[in-house]
Image (tube, rainbow, N blue to C red):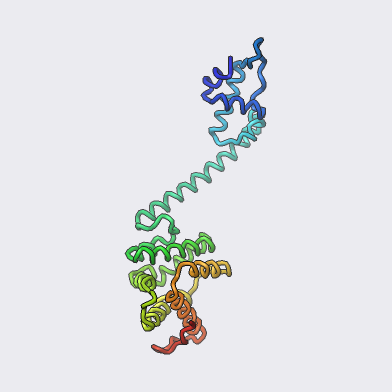
Length: 258
């Protein structure tokens, strides 16, 4: 039979038949008197076997050994089964993450562990919420899945998935060149009050230099001067309070680092 007939019977393209010939999966057939390749039923059976194996996920490079050695075929099937189990587990986990994101109304690119936080700040202005989401995504990527789960657990324990936290995010997003100095100072103090318990009871998650540098680079490109000012005040006051072990009295805090 001609290559077109063989391809039609096997349910493949003529290009596939020629490719298998080139890489040695199909034996070169005899040629007819007019020079055309003359395939027979053995080629058809070989193509059908190749099709079955590739449907199972077997790479073409491994087919020659499998086609000619039943023992190798058994070993390959065991490996394919292990890969299939791993793929099922991965897809099941993905579906669970999608379901949780749908349930909580969070953005799809938010780490599933932080879905509750996404729900808490859902009503915040889009730009401010986006900054929070993007920073969380960056942090989660750098500290890994286990670190993100531990951080989310600590945040939940300190009741950070609440409207009060969302209000801080809203106020931070509204900072601009016309924001009064008093409002900047007050926001920094409120952020210290809100986040200090988390810092004092930090989970077993290490924030390396790469996390700090990436967050700094993100802030450099996305925050305005007043937002930078609040961040500097926040860091200075947190360090002061952690060092002293006491909460400073209202108005008793380091000067604006800016």
